[in-house]
Image (cartoon, rainbow, N blue to C red; front, top):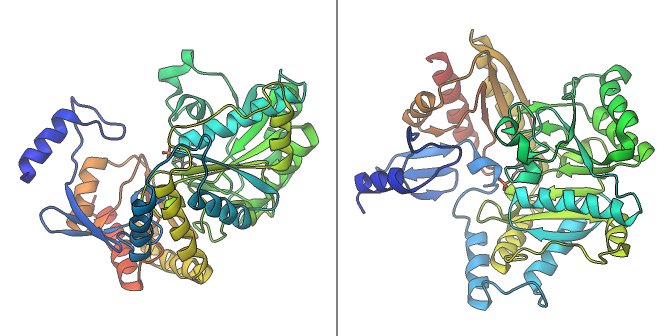
Length: 426
Ligand SMILES: *Cc1c(COP(=O)(O)O)cnc(C)c1O
């Protein structure tokens, strides 16, 4: 199919994320991808600054992940998980339990990040029901949080930026604490914790869980906050009988400099959501882990079972990709890889600080954020980035990158200099 027909048919037939058919946003046809490069059908190659929305940890077309999937295809691509099990799923569960914070021993394999959040919320509800506290049905979440687009997940996203106005009448109504006001390296004392403490003190009898993205709030604002806040949140949940759900769908797998962002605070959540980078960006897979107390509580309850079971649960191909990706990650010195990227992002993005439209530049792990004083015009700026040979997709006032771990010094320098150049001329 020639490129013009492809683009015409795309406009006629396909939804893209958050898009309109009346005013379709420009899309670029991709024909291949290799390493950190995405190749357009006209032959241009773009350095991927987004890791395809946090997923592509080790770059595109990685030989080991390719091989793992090919090997698995020849054995079994899919089999129902009701009544069957298989090695890819069992190996993955073993790896995840070993890698994640202490105590998270039970693994539910879900098909996407949003679904893993739905699963986490249902776990919390079933837990309290079975503990004889069926009135604990509400969630406490944070402003600027993002947890996915399905109904349960959407209901715990930021109430202002998170589509609540469109769906409010059809959504469960939860509680929201202010976004943490202490930055990653800033002291966090009682005054910063007080708003969260007050809400919990006031409402704990009806609250099932606190759900948050540890340390980095992603799609809801790209904000970094203090590990002390997370520690205090864990302590408050213990004191007042709330489960703590950590959504590490974006932050997991080394992105913040720790394997999981919870480790910055040395805490374990009761329930943990993983997704995005889990398969190294090859296909959709997510996981919800919980501790023994939550698992036991659910299974002791009136239902006696956990009530969720996706058709593609534990898909062997996805598990094989995840196993290969985790092996690549853990068999390298990923800490120094992330530290090198962090240092280079700091240096490379520093010149953006001097631009008049830039409000703040911040970097943590492989995540670099340039916050502007006003929203950028995405379609316009996207074209400029493509013209510079990089793929960066801002939202609102946030221009950010989180490149694949395999990006080399030269490619990263090209990425950051292109970013500053485009922002200087827009
Ligand atoms: C992307 C994301 C989700 C949703 O994951 P999907 O796979 O898009 O459903 C949930 N929580 C966080 C923190 C995310 O970054």
